[in-house]
Length: 269
Image (cartoon, rainbow, N blue to C red; front, side, top):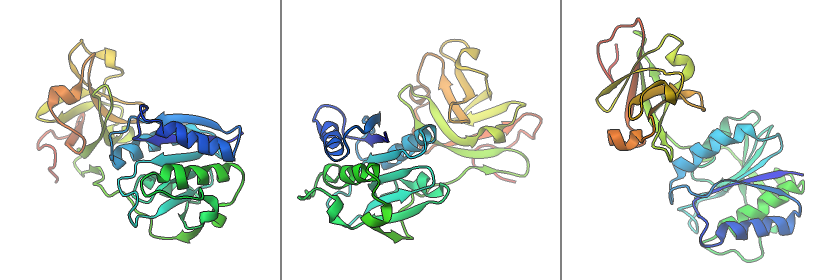
């Protein structure tokens, strides 16, 4: 039995998710369907890409990941399939599958063979008409090359990367705000190091990383290493996003202990 995961911005009220599941099961009966999230903010490709990138490594080899957040549906944006040594990824060519392109053996295919789509293609629901059928045919063992042509220019989400400066301080960015209001950064745990330091964000200085949310009093800001192994900022029993009034994309800096403490987010030496 092959697993197909689904990540969309469709929500649950309109039946769109169920329709895609029906298409998959009609082509590949017995497929195990796993909902990653259907509460992605509408049209937020970056959020969907983040959610999928954090979840995909925990699924078994051979999983098919179907991701449909598609503000360009009906335009000339390409339907895409990424095949790696471990998994396959299906969705629009708008950057939602960016992380999969760094997977071992990754190859990108433009889905251009309508033999593996539904017979009638709408201009508004390619999740049903193209992506779900392709995912189902992958489950049935159809090779990626039969469903599309190799391409070398899939769309990748662009964004700044964290920087570690010679004096030891790190400039990073908030890449996700979860439903608890936790602010997740792109600063790797290994960069923060084991000795602690000071996190600076939105004019606040927070000592850390703390070993857990419970390491501080209720209502207090806390910096810690989150489940994705990056630095995050939270409020115990509250929302750091609401407290600090910031969103994804904001700057965050970390100064490891026993390093020079001058400067701030965005500075360099």
